[in-house]
Length: 79
Image (cartoon, rainbow, N blue to C red; front, top):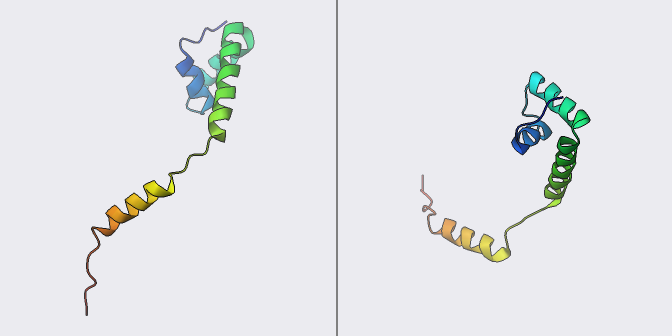
């Protein structure tokens, strides 16, 4: 049975950042080790919840950015 050293290993696995050897070891640990299985399930739920979050700047923030950007506008050159 393989014990995963850190939750970081599970996170890398969830995001597809492990090589073949690591993937096999992690999958074996998830299947054989109850603690790894529980941590994996918690991280999957957390990832799902985070994927549902949608953040957008407020209109006030957009306005301030646009005003700031306009302060750097260059005058049009006439050909």
